[in-house]
Length: 190
Length: 142
Image 1 (cartoon, helix red, strand yellow):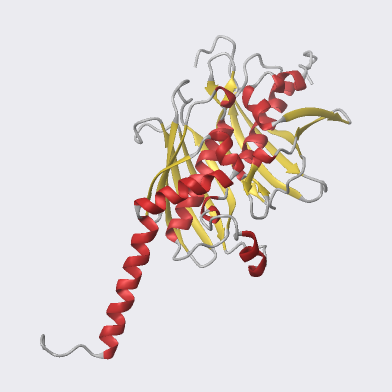
Image 2 (cartoon, one colour; image 1 turned 30 degrees about the horizontal axis):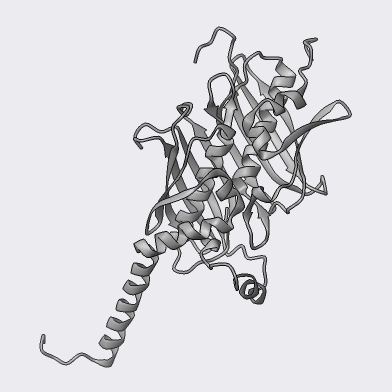
């Protein structure tokens, strides 16, 4: 049995598996992380708040923002505004959805609920960790947490749903648009 | 309202760094508070469409809810957000946006607010949000 020659079908199957692994490796490699980070400079609001991609895995990722005086929502104590946390979580959740997809598709946030557990500490940056725990053909479901250092001590938590294939641009226009922009930005758009 | 002096919301927004960062101002229409998010390139989240960043829209809605609470309740301290749910209805075009908030229910400690944002057509909202906020007393240190 073991020494039986591989059938054509087996060979095809093996080739397909290898190709899939290669694609997976490329998608989650350190090189791709760097490319994603570089792509962020084409997303103006991501630049404005200083978003960074920390790590990427299948269906999940981490992003961060620094502490910035522009983010202050309460002048008396310097605590940042919830809106900045919304932006961080929205973008991180969106990237987690993209990382759950076999190929990059246009996605759109349908809804996003944020629970604020405690005020962020003035002076400290924030990290968000998001997981896309289910993706159907049309909808993706995501959970996220924002924290300073310890994920078990969250500042905020979120649940969101995203629409998959929300493409409102004709394919030929996309090709034209991405000519001078890296295709990665589709993954990072918020 | 309760006869309390209505705070100058535009000055209130200008005093908050994040509201300034987004580019918000306040208007009055038939006595109702309307906030405005002035379009700026830095608000773009999707350069391909282009569209406003969902987070910037969320922050704008949350800030509008806070402004409405400060105006209507006359509280000394800005309310603390407990939870907010943002529904994205249409992509935000690269133009000015407007929002208005309504207090749905005011309890002793928690208030429920709903907010809606639109751009050139008021009947075509781009996003809606519902949130709970904790009212703080002046002696409340938390």
